[in-house]
Structure formats: C-alpha cells, structure tokens
Image 1 (cartoon, rainbow, N blue to C red):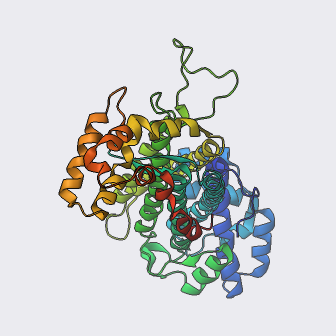
Image 2: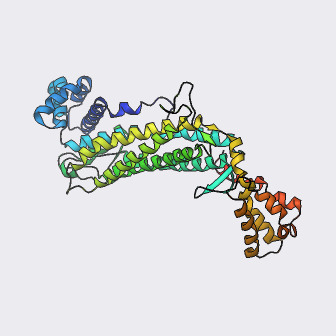
Image 3: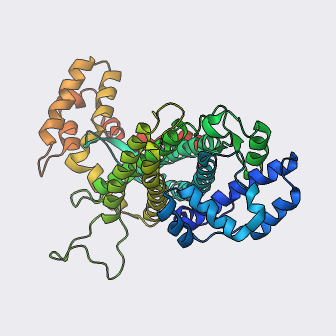
Length: 431
C-alpha cells in the first residue's frame, strides 16, 4: 500500500539528476550481483558504493565530446571511483542501464499517479454520498430524458475511476521489468543469474525475452493507460462544462474571491479548469499514438524510440499527474445548485415524466401505439413554449382522465419512482 504524502513530486522523477541516479542504481545492482556470484571482488563493490557519484553538468560536458550519454555517465562516475571503476558495466550494454533505469522511473511515476488517483476516488465517493438524493434531469443527446440524481451521475464516475485503479495495478506489473542481458539480449557476456539478482535488488522482474532493448509494447501500454485515464478526466470535465452553461447552471467551478472571468465582461464565471483539462487530455492521447509507433524497431534494436520517449514519457506522466490534482480539487470544491436542477427538471410542466404516463396508460389497457400518440401530443404541445405545461395538458385530456384518476396522474410525476433502485448501485460501489 502506498503511504500518503511520502512520495516525491512527479517533476522530481524526470530531472536529469534523478535519471542519472537510477542509472547508478542499476550499475551498482549489477556489480553487487556479479560479486555475489564471485565474478568481481566484493571489496571492489564496497569501494564503488562508497565512492560512486556523478555531476550532471560534467556528464553533459563529456557527452558533448564523446556523443554518447552512457559513456559520458560512466566516465564521470569513474572520475569519482578510480581503480575499482573497471568493474562497473562489465558485460553490460547501454540499453541494460537505460531500459532498466527507465523502468524504475516509470514505476515511481506510476506510484505517484496511483496515489493521486486514490485521492480522486475518495473525493468522488464523498461527493456522491453527499448528493445521493439531489434530483436532477438526466440527458441523452443533450436533451432532457428522465430524472436521475447528481449522486447517481457521480457514482458512474466513481465506477470508472475504480476501473482505472485496477488497470494501474496490472500496469505496474507490466512495466516493472528490467533487462541485463547484454548486446542483442543473448547473455553472451553476462549470465542470466546476474540479471535475476540485480532486478530483484531493484524491485523489478527480468524481462522474459528481451532483445537488446525491452520490447516497446510495454511502454505503449503504459502511455495508453494514462491516455485512457486522461480521457475519463476529460469526460468529467466536459460534463462540468456543460452543466455550467448559463442556461443550465446546475453546477459551477469554484470561483475564488478576487478571481476575474473576463477582461471585457465583469459578469463572466468561466469553467477554465475544466477547459484546461480537456486540452491536456488531447496531449496525453497524442503521446499514446507516438508510443505505438515506437513498437516496431529494426531487428534487435534501433534508437528511433529514444528521442520520442525523452519527450512523451515524462510529458505523459507529468500531465496525467497534474490532471489528477486539478480534477480532484475541482470536484472537491464544485458548487452544486439543487434549486436549478429542480427548475430544469420541471420545465414545460414536467414533460420528462412522459414515459411514466405512457406506461401507466398501457397498464390500464390501452395499446402502446394509442397511449404513445396521446402522450406525445401533449408533450409536443408543451415543449419549448414559455407557458407550456405537460402536467396540465395531461390532466385535462379526456382520453387520459377516462383511464387515470387525479391521484394516479400525480403519481406519474413523482421523481422518486426513478430513484427506487439507486441503493443497489450505491451498495455495489460501497458508497
């Protein structure tokens, strides 16, 4: 279980310093494994662990000359270690370090994202509990349909983010994979036991059958899962944007004291955070496409994936992390207006209760076609008219009153009928 508030912030995980730190972790784990198997002196490993260090600025200086990042890194580390440095990187290829260290970064990033997702889950759960019985209109095609509650809407969000939580647990297993198998992955100059011991020390599993690199389907899966999570956040954000429209105004983003909505129009209160999240989701989705392109490398390896990953992996992680923080705070402080929900529910005299009238007439013996025609006539007469009142039209229609008593008509307009099974959904989600 991830401890709350003890994880590093996402940005720290994608600095040059943290990257080189993970490279050094991999190199030391490989040295320790080789020493345990008797291939290098244990004293040399202790000396390496005591002296090993690096300076990012110095690494970049060396790289400018040698044009190879791992060689530049090793050169700088050996400047600190000295003679014992000859045991570092024995039998390894650059991708052993790069891909195994990248797995450490991705796992650490996923742990931070998972904690933020847990925060979002709890905020949605609390909001759904608070608004379990806050009645509002449900919409299909953007048109009024039948009554729901705002809590029911949030229960749908909760179910979705809980699915993401399960996906991320599986994803952690998928990405927590290292490889220390040498050039083209055949273990020609380093044996599988070194890989197994080193990966265990790093909290990883050895890749089942690597080439010179870990196959990029794992990384594509990683970013696609983040893109899917971002898409869900976008769905929530778009819903908030739609419900904040002036002519709807059932919910609204929190508007802080002193905040301004428009440079020209003082009255404006815009859903800027929801719109920001919508735009960010587009970016994360685009990164998923780029990682799919990275899967097809030439033969046992090329580095066409490397330049892409240097951009899209940190970007996707940082964006998703930020989106989770934003949507969590947005939902937590969301302004909800039950009175506006009631107003919208009852516009045109409760026309949204048409199906209840239809089904009640059918229960009384009318054919569905006849009942539908009667109800539709009153509904369309009331629809979109300032004084349109479906309830009054139905109550005055002799074809209806011949079948239904005033009490039976009133019962058709009771929104509680639509909420009778809400508890079953809440129990499934432990709300």
